[in-house]
Length: 560
Image (cartoon, rainbow, N blue to C red):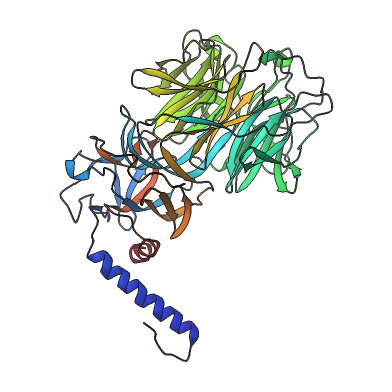
């Protein structure tokens, strides 16, 4: 239909309006299978009988369901009519990202059976403490599975490194920080270019390791270290340049100095808490008992840092859960467990399991903090202060490092065989071994979720590997504060993710008959295997068909 007018711009607007009206009429003839408006008065569905029970939800007029990231969620009972099988489907909703950075992670909509690994997961990822880095910062994830076997792919070796110490996703790219063993070699940052290719982003410092990476206020930051390699049973690195500084990436291999928080040689953990960058700093043996004021520091701008104290020993991984900052202890005994920051320079102990000398990694799974440890290769859950629960040992391994939630399951990388395990209901299942170097210690160390796959960096081969489990996609850029429209679609053997009306990610084609979804479990809103979402939800719709790009755009504009 053409509309004659003397103003071309007006014609374009009128034509768009006519198109949108046609799309709206077509959608009215094909309503959603289920609809939860969350208009501030309650969670009842308006087009079906599947009402959502609520727990801890605060209803806000015009802002839907307010979820606190701790206990609040909505749940729709399992129903045969909600079985999706191999049919196309769309999940569409409005979500508000909480203004506190690093505190919004969790599932938006989850229909997933963890026993059979069947269903779909749609959520927002904030993952830090894996081990040293902020692996994912406000990245949307959409994946489904039907009990498939995972597959690992070698993604090459960034430069000449001996250890991929850090992995972080930023602005659509995956970055790796490395340990370089040679006398004249400095730790570097590389950007993944696909296949087995990596692009050099430069060396921030003269020291031998880029030990931590993270995203703060839209920019990539790197912590550097002097790492001898002795703790990994390598010959000592001849590079004696001191580490312990933080840098900000300015592009084109240029790095801006953000200062040295303390006199220590190692920046270990990095995360964002209450809109401030936090790092943990320490010395490694034999210097680890000599440097004062090791612990956690908060960035104050320029090259200034404020000491946040320590509980009496060194602190390593950092993460944020439920609005609180947590750190892993590194000094054994009562100083080897998990600690929570209480403000100022104060820390409280959350638990020190027996035989744990060091806590290496953190992940949130099913809304509960999990920690990977040395020296029995176990994972522990920490549901509350002074509480810990043994979540099992990963094979016969000794250390658990890159602990990460991915597509409905929890994964952990280990030492000494550089294996990666998946937590199943009956224990931990080996998914593969990533390093076969002829040495005593091999590590599956750093992890991140990128392009719908789980990436893992190793020692001493220095390779990065990627795991596919089911089929998944991710929007690999941090979502800013505020409201966003999200539509996740399965259509004819392809997944798509639209953010604010634009296509943000799309999977490779797969056979349309694959991934039959028959999960006999409740549909959850604001909660799932990936944890509890902190923010707001409204206008949640489930269609048993794939909406077109035009329909997604029209729906977004109609419900804004």
